[in-house]
Amino acid sequence: KVATLLLDTFEKKDLSPSITMGALRGLECLLVAGGSNQLSDSTMTRLCTFLDVVATQVTSHTSEETYPDLVDCLSTVLGNIIGGAVNENASQSDNLLNAPTVKDHVITRIYPSLLRGIEDVSMDTEPQVLKVLSIASSSNMEVAEKIMGSCLALWNKSLKENGITASNSQAQAVQFLLRNGGDMTLSAFHRSSLVDEIFDYLVDFTRSSTKEEIRASVANLSLPETMEEREAFLQGVLAVKLITSTFLPAFSSKVPQARLTKLLNLVSNILPPLS
Image 1: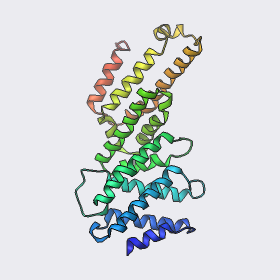
Image 2 (image 1 turned 180 degrees about the vertical axis):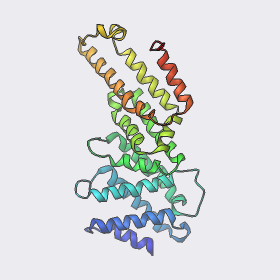
Image 3 (image 1 turned 90 degrees about the vertical axis):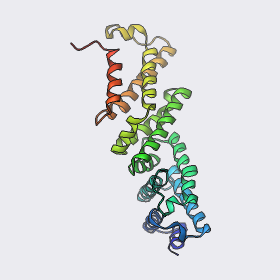
Image 4 (image 1 turned 120 degrees about the vertical axis):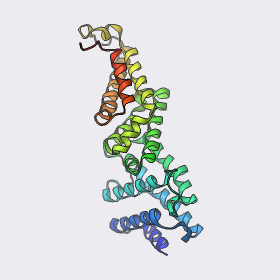
C-alpha cells in the first residue's frame, strides 16, 4: 500500500515540487530498505517505470530552469539508487535494490543511459548526469571503480576513434568525478590501467604534433605557418590542457607508489637530472 501510494503521488500531474520531492524521497527509502517479497510483480514493474522517468528527467534537464531543487532531488535519489544497485558484490540482503527485476533494470537500462548522457554534457551548468554518477561513486569502493572505469573507457575509446577535440565531454566527465566523487573515486582512478593508456596517448600526441624545432628550444618557437600546422598546434595545446586539468589534480592527494614510479620514469626520460 505504501509503494502504491508513493507511486500514485509521484505520477500525478500539477503537484507542487515539494510534494513530488517528498514522494521521491519516500520511494528512495522504499527501494533501499524495503523488502522485495512484499510487493507484487505489477508494483515492481511500476518501480522500474519510475526509475525510467527519473533517469529521463535527469538526462533531459526538462525541469532544471523552472524547478532546480526538484532536479537536484531527482539526481540525489537516482545517485543513491545507482550506488546500491550496481554493486554486484553487495551482500544479498532482502531489499528492493537486490530484487532481480529492479537490479537488472538499473544495471542494463538506467546505468547505460547515464553513460550515454555523458556525450551531451555541457559544463556551462552543473551537469546532473555527472552529479548522479559522483553521488553513486561515493557509496562504496566497488561502485566507484565501476563508474570511474566506465568513464575512463569511454574517454579512451573516443580519443582513439574520434581524436582529442571530439573527446572533450568524456574528459570533462572524468574531471568532474575527480573533483566531486570523493576519496574512493580518486583511488579508483589510480587503480585503473586505463589511466596509463590515456596519459601515454596524450603525451605521445603532444610530442608528435609539435615541430621538432619547437620542442628543442623555446628560443626557436614559431607560429604555425599553415592551417594543418595550426590545427596540429591547437590539438597539442588541448592535449597539454587535458594533462594539466585531469592528471595533475589527481596527484594532489595520496597516490599509489606504482603510479608515482611510472610518472617519475616518464619525466626522467624528458627532463635532465636536477643535479
